[in-house]
Amino acid sequence: MSGPVPSNLVLLSDVERCAPGTKVRFLGCVDEYIVKSANLRVKHKHSATGPLATVNVNVDHVLERLKPHELDVGTWINVIGHVEQRKERGVYVQAVAIWDAGNVDLDAYQKAVERRKEAS
Image (cartoon, rainbow, N blue to C red):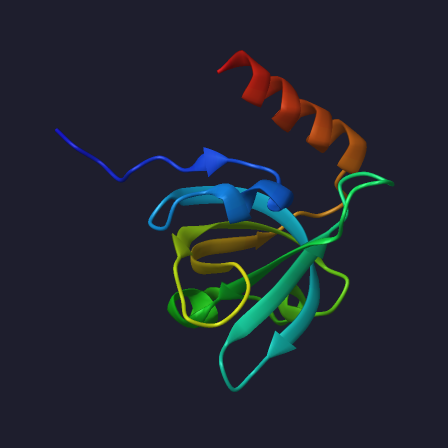
């Protein structure tokens, strides 16, 4: 019996290092929603000294299930999707699920993801 391929829990800054086709799960903050292309630009700076990580998330396949506030700038969302290779610059993910992260403790989240990465 086979089921869906599991996603890899990663920090948003690690998505760019994932191979095309990899199914990922990450947390990010909505920075912009581009209606014409159904793309969310999601950002997060994981450390004070690190760079600002940006991922473009295409929401075509989940648009009907999204709640309006999940497209608002400043909303923290969880994303599950497949990393895509595109001609455009930047990192792209085709979303298969998105939901509001709510009142997330970013430090605890980052530490938990890092510990999980070290354990595997």
